Image (cartoon, rainbow, N blue to C red; front, side, top):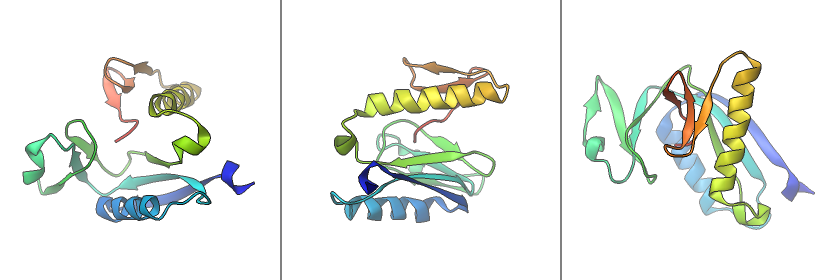
Amino acid sequence: MLLNTIIIRQLGLQPYKKILLSMQTLTKNRNCNTVDEVWLLQHYPVFTCGYNDNNYKLTIRNIPVIKTDRGGKITFHGPGQQIMYVLIDLNRRKISVSYLINILSYIVVNTLKKIGINSYYSKSMPGVYVLKKKFVLLD
């Protein structure tokens, strides 16, 4: 059954705005038959900021700052940083956002452990951390 399938796409190095538009389009056109997807990629240098952050009016060292519809503060994305966008129907899979974040955090911590990188998950400041620095899980 296709609804139990998740398509994983390796998209390489991508502009942030192009990917954002693609995610918005997929979400807008989603219906009960839309197959869930996970996109793995890197972005050209860009800062993103949450809807309560006014830094989007800036350009930092010639790197664009883009306002997003997420919460949180300013975040840098760039080449060498693996990004994972999870485009799944949580209602259909009967899971909550917090449960999804816990699952993804567990996967990231254990994957990093397998390659010799110690990390941990912080519930008080959600995210996976390596050497007390945030390993961005969701943006």
